[in-house]
Length: 463
Image (cartoon, rainbow, N blue to C red):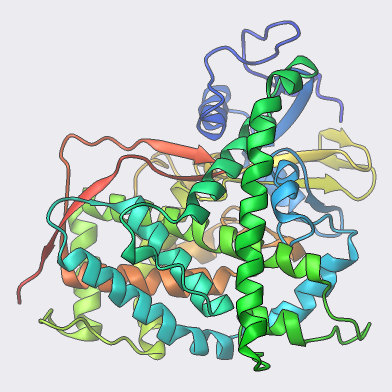
C-alpha cells in the first residue's frame, strides 16, 4: 500500500520512525491519541522497519468490513501469539484447513440451546464471586477477581476443569504464565530488527519455558477428560474429542485440540474480565447510571435480601439497560482493541487509497468508537443511552465492532455477553460500589486491555 499520501505523526525520526512521545507499554492508547490529534480517518505509523496503517474513521472501516473485498489479516500481535495458540480459531490463518474445520465443529457450542446448558455454571461462578466479596475485609482488586471469575467460568463450562482460583491468595500459575506470554508477544512486535532479537534471547528463552508450562496445563485438562471415560459432547472439549467434520469425516487432530483449548481459555476469560472491570469502573464513577442499572435489577429480582437471586436463563435478556452499560463499555474500551484486514484483490480504500492484493490495515477500535462524525461531539462521555434501539438503528453500519467483523468475528460473542450481563446484574443488585475517590483510570495493555490498580469497596445493600 502506498502510504506517502496517508497522514503520519509529526517528528518522525530516521530509521527509528514514529517513536517520540510513545511507549512500548501503551501502543493502543498512544495510537488513539495520535488519531485524535491528526483528525484523519486513517493514518500510518512507522516503527523501525514496519509501517502500520491504522483505520479510525467510519468510511474506511465500513470498506474493510466488506467480506467480498477484505479478509482477516493475521499479523503483528496476533502473529506473535501463534507460538501460544498455533492454528487455534483466533490465531489461525484463514487458509489453514483446521480453522474452517474447528469453526464448523464448534459452532453448535455457541447456539442458544448451548447457552442454556452453560447458564447454571455461569450463575454458580457468579455466586462464588458474591461469596468472595461478601467476606472482603477491605477494597477488592476488581481486575484480579474478574479474572478469577471468568477463568473458572470458561474452564468449567467449556472443559469441565476446575482451576480453584477462588481458593488461592495469588493468581493461578496459568494466569501468571499467560500474562507473561501476552506481554512477550506485545513487546516482540516493536523490536528493533536484528539487534533487538539478539538482545531478547533471554526473554525468548523464558517465554519458551512459559509456553511449555501452559502446554502441560492444557494437556492435563485433556487427560482429565479422557480419563473420565464418558463421551461428553455437550461442551467445547467434548465436541472436539468426539465429533468428526460433516464433510471430511475427520476429527480435529491432537495438536489442534490443544491449540483450541488454550485459545478459548485465554481469549475466553481475558477479554470478558477486562470488559467487566471497565464496566464496574464506569458504574461506580456515574451514580445516576448505577442507580438506573440497579433499579432494573431490582425490577427483575426484587429488593436485595440475605440470599442472592437465582437468575433464570430467561431473565438475563430482561436486563436491557445493563446490556447497554456493557455495550457502552465496549465502545470506549473494546478489550480486544484492534483487528487486521487484508485486501483479497487490488482495490481502493475509502475511494482514495490504492491497495494491492495482500495489503493490510488495522482497524483501531477505540478510535473508531470515538469518531465524532458517528458518536457526536462528546465521544469520551460514558452514556449507555447511545445504545437505545432507535439510536442503534440510526447509526451507520460497521461503526461498532467490539467483537471483530465477518467470518472471523468472535465465535464466543453470545457466551461473553450472557456471562457479563448476568454478573453485572448480580453485582449492582447486591452491592453499593464505592470507588477510591483519588483513583484515575489507568489502562494496562497486554494485547488486550483492562484497568490497572482499580479497587472498589463493596458494601452489602439493605432493603
